[in-house]
Image (cartoon, rainbow, N blue to C red; front, side, top):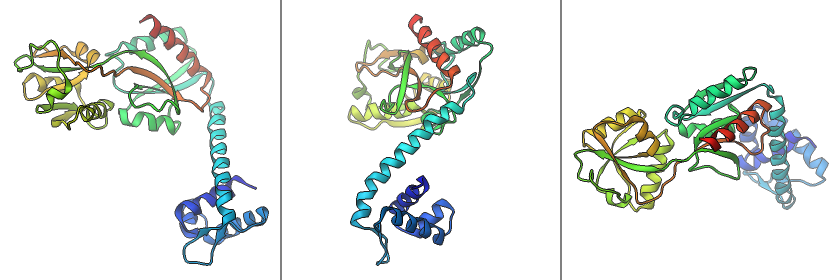
Length: 294
């Protein structure tokens, strides 16, 4: 039995027809039929009922389906693991959200490069919502992102910086002299937010939802300078990480601690079921020591 037979079988089940499955795999319908007939011959039972217009699984086909899914998952897991061995031992790649300077991570990367001049790595800044899909597609070995929406069954991670959210308002805002504020109190205010491709946008929407309201978004921007600039005009307020506020320090903006404890920690992430190149493992170990001393 070949893995392609199992994959073709699963495609027919998922698409509901031989023609759609054939199109999905770029083969002719007659070729697909021959492959399925060969599979049925090997199993000794028919797996599809072809007597009606729509293809249905036979009782034996239903039983085979569970095994086929396990075999396909095992095959894919094996190929992912083997893919790690193809990588050059002395090179790796990192995807990162745009926070390297604000959290001092750029300095740590420079230190790593000085310590390991023989190792080669590529560093690319991409939007937060594209980070994990890029990791899943093996376009990168590692990613630097926020911890909030990680699936810990799928990814391993190393926390490299703690941070949490706070409210920033204009120095002329009615909340400006508050020592703390709850998210729920802001339900009637205009929000200046980071745009939809960022993790922070998703986090803000999620936390406001937990507080029982959908924020009124007056303006969204990819640029942190624009967010602080608009908040400074008192046209709206923003919920931002403490470290981002401290780095930019806009003169017309003041910060108010949130009563809710909303963490937005920075983590180094990699796929659980993929073997890392040796150079990437060296980088992870370096960052673990750096984080412990930061």
